[in-house]
Image 1 (cartoon, rainbow, N blue to C red):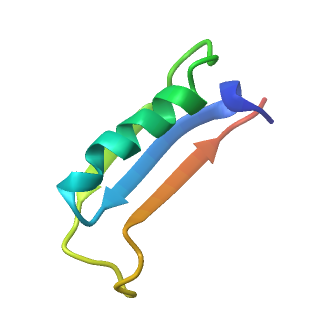
Image 2: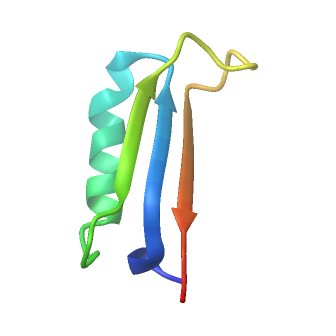
Length: 63
């Protein structure tokens, strides 16, 4: 599968200061995609390990 198979992206950030860097990444990665996937972005207080700052989940589907 490739970029055009991505149908959903969820992201969780622990700090709004990470928003500019996060927003730049999907734009760069998905720039060549014919159709942009659905997405959700949430700010959370923390993850189970303090060193974790961002979690990203990507779903892809194929016929």
